[in-house]
Length: 151
Image (tube, one colour):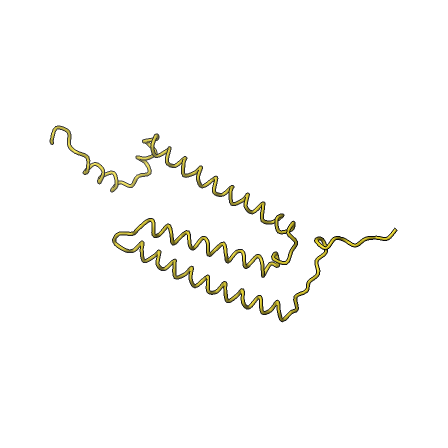
């Protein structure tokens, strides 16, 4: 009985020459540098918007979304090229990516839950609001309230 070799999916043969790999690394490094410069420019724009007299929250949120997308693109290229995950078989990639997606879901669930708790606590626990609100905000709120009997 003859021993059969492992399937082509399990065995991995590296066909890329050193010159090709070096070219791929240089190209990826330049791409990551360009993405980083774009992220820094967007960060400067966000900083400038916040320093302005009337910051637009939706514009800032849009810029932050773009920065998140660019950061995910950088993470993909770093993992794919420099950590050689792009050269692995599909099952190995899924073994790493699926738990990562679950971890991201876990973080988002805790952020959403924490925000909900904060909003409920601010709504129903007046003592918490009184002890955590700065004094000048309380004074401004009292000044805005109409005086009883005067209208």
